[in-house]
Length: 211
Image (cartoon, rainbow, N blue to C red; front, side, top):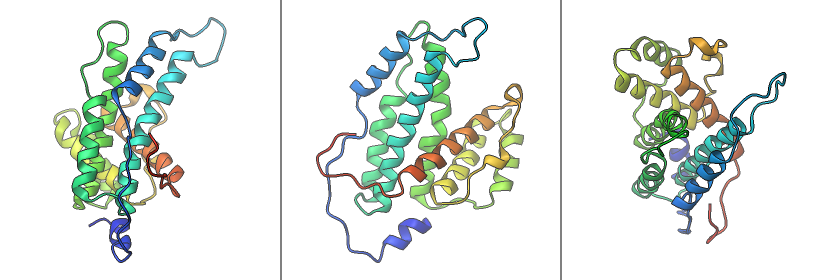
């Protein structure tokens, strides 16, 4: 079992609370914001287009809400089975068929990056993963072009370590965007997960609130 969950096992079980982490309306609202946004860089301006800013916030929102589920498992609000069920509910929304049209490719890329988020959470809940981050990254980079599923399995183990408190993989990230592989994109998502986990250090919401 992962370290944080193990540490909390000696404490009394916390009362069950009611949470809504993500719903279809929330997803649709983000999509509507993206549909209305401009993704083009203004000539002569270095300002990031509104569409890209919204997309980044969209991605962050998903990561944060998913990791709240794991955090509540760590706090003994959810059993492993309950946490897995909540993850599946959110995953069903996030991994739905991408809308056709201008947003299709954008949403598909977002979904591709989130594969490691859900896989890492499940790997953490399962508690069986390699803790050698350097080895995981090296193997994953060498595997991604010929075995995407195998590379995702390795990236999920990196993410599970991040959830469990291992210093993140920033030192493994590449500086040249044109050289990024899909595995590198998953490492970037793991870095986002690390930042989200830090923001949830004292997270434990009030009963009945919607998230």
